[in-house]
Image 1 (cartoon, rainbow, N blue to C red):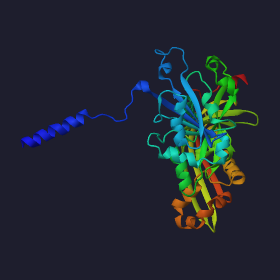
Image 2 (image 1 turned 45 degrees about the vertical axis):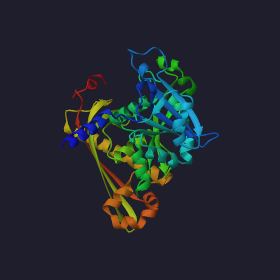
Image 3 (image 1 turned 30 degrees about the vertical axis):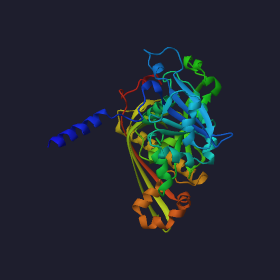
Image 4 (image 1 turned 90 degrees about the vertical axis):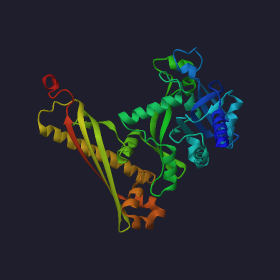
Length: 397
């Protein structure tokens, strides 16, 4: 019994005295918040990382130095380059807080699957970061554009996309697992948000850009990037991106503008949207039914409609319904005719709801998608008119 007590004491002491074999002090590390991957000139890839200078992000400790450092290295393997960037950065880089991955358009056109494998395999890199395509630019140039309110470009983009998604839609919110699932599961092709540099990229990379009321350059959400497999096929508009999200049942709130007469418009704030998609194969032809349900309130109007009458709400609601049907329908038609690749996941729907028939066409599903009969049906109810029922416009116009 005495011997057992001694052994227990030794074991407990060893546990208490043990430490982390790979621990590093805060002064020895730099947190990487963003990464860009571009086509290399001498090597296969150019990797660019943004590491934050934490003391400069806090107003109390800031001393006027740059809030982040952006550094690039070139080689044939991202696995090596993530360590090789220390040729120019003194501290050990920590990738576990990375928020944004930006891929250059030229590299995306050639294929991205090889380096995505490294990101998915690495134990330190999480899978919840935004994946973006730099349209008409290098990803490294996007990371260098400074911004007034958030001094880290990658953190700014992460917040910007989240805000855009909540307020209007437009960001598909694609994470690494979404891309891998689209590659490995039948019935869907990947998409990613695309950003571009609005203005002069060279001037936007200067510290003075943060000091200007009108910056020389801004990184803006531009469009939706369409992939076939791991290769970039093309881009849709930002409006198409929102229509894509409507189909995915991912719209939180958004705003649309509809005609209330031949030359005047009404703004509607749309909320509480719900989308259901059904699919099946009939005689070898895919049939997809999309039902969108939403509520809205009037955010502003140019017309003197009588908003104290229920008929006015019904008439304007019908106009909005038709417009949403047209918008979503045109986006689907554009993808069918120009790309012929199922980015909407209709194949996944048919797989779940008509499994036996889908298995027969699984290998050529994109051809079936391009020829599919797709119907969009929207029911929108206008609930109220903001804080005014009767507008002063009736007395003025």
